[in-house]
Amino acid sequence: MTDPVRPDTKGQPGTAAAALFGCCPRCHAKTLFAGYAQFADRCRVCGLDFTRFNVGDGPAAFLTLIIGALVTGLALWLELAAGPPFWVHVILWVPVTAGTVLGGLRGCKAWLLQAEYRRRAGEAVTADWTVDPADRPE
Image 1 (cartoon, rainbow, N blue to C red):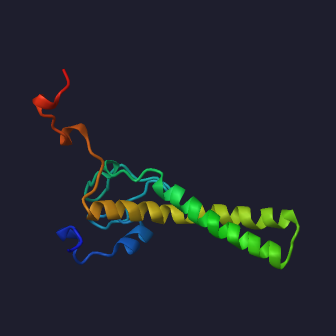
Image 2 (cartoon, rainbow, N blue to C red):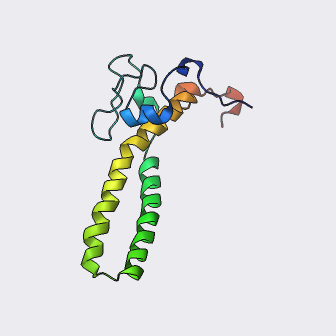
Image 3 (tube, one colour):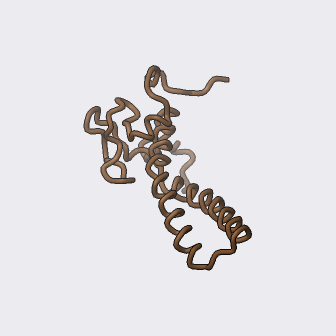
């Protein structure tokens, strides 16, 4: 079975490249972000509405868990190998953890939005759902 990729994405940069540069999934202009990790409401070039995509806090939670596990493993290794004082751990691992999570957040959010666009996923609105009158509670 083939991957349900939109036909209008042929010849465009891959998801990772578009996420790295903050490109609009439709026109690939660098208009995806209004702030460091805050999406713009819409693309200034083609008008694609970014608010219809539901990226949420998934990338932040995922990054925090993965990076936290890696940093914990590295901190344990350093403790067992060298046994530095506690303040060395604080000075070393707090900035490393915060920097890696914040550094990866923009790319992960953009990657998730790109993936949602390519697979035609989006947040449903009430106009998308129709209720049969026979199914309504009395």
